[in-house]
Image (cartoon, rainbow, N blue to C red):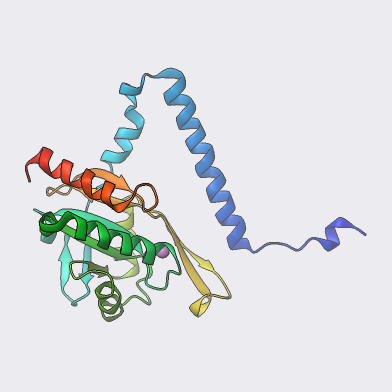
Length: 217
Ligand code: NI
């Protein structure tokens, strides 16, 4: 049998996704070679420069229907996570994790602004966001907006997302997205990045509390 005729082409979206991952891995390998091969650990400037480029800048609509910008959250430690309400796994897991971190932070949670920003604004209206965030934590703020506003916000935070056709998903698509939780200072500058699964919630809460203590804010 001709092997070409028995070959079933995988879906284009899956190929794109695989290529994206391969590119990311190649980039990480290059960065690793560069930093371990030519520089002592203290001088990892390329990575620090990349993190400094992450900044909080947006004009969106919160889950109560109010237009908000990053200025509305100045003075609070923003905990920022991007996702979508139809997400089958990463988003609910991460938001439940963030809720646990907030509970462990106790009184210090009042100094935070936990933000869930949708990458699927077509479906995630303020009403949908309101129902969703209330299921996780009373402090959690859901943010949505136009496709352009969401794209600009993701760009400011250097967040990746992409629509992927998936027959088994509701409406026939999923949104691939990065799973990072950003901690921004009360001035809106990047401070740290976390991921659910990298540490237990107690450890993330402890790290955030230490950062707050260091800043005295
Ligand atoms: Ni998700």
